[in-house]
Length: 267
Image (cartoon, rainbow, N blue to C red; front, side, top):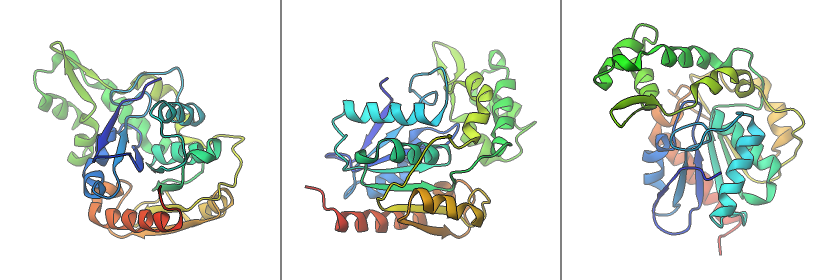
């Protein structure tokens, strides 16, 4: 499977960014461009999202293995990359580190924990809202926003969701595999069974100060899997830390990437 990717900066990529559920690689564009002079990067559309292919399941091993295969295809399997993942992408990144430990040199997990959630973090309701939009009645993108407003009150959340709306050959369609996502929301909420650690590389764990996705009780499990983890809390940020506090997050990433470089210089 060849995943859709955007290359930011020139030269060999040093970082791969992974988005969250119902996101796209371009969610990371602003942060990646700020870092690009020193750390060129790849912005991935994960399977069943954006312009990447659809699959038959959404398990984290499937997504992590698809990422590994794509990196090998691009000649980036030498362990020189830092993988940065937010939310669902953070679980993909953690799974990747545990299943393909020699393929990365640093790990960043943003506002997610290696835990289970029976609620799907509320994303099932967002998927239902998207599926309820009558695409045949749309003449403009704003029409979809109007329909979504009946169930999704936040304009910012609607804007995030509507990035997935695409017009092709005169017809509107959703880029994510919404039926599979809704069916497999339990898999997305879960943490895969059978994953064992530890992965001993440098790990940065970032949480939004106003988010409850990462809680104190998650610390022991995270440290068991990633013993060199460092937890940083970004104030005045919710779950979408890179949207709420992009400058603070970019500074935090730059410090971590510089520390990784100092520990294991490239070339």
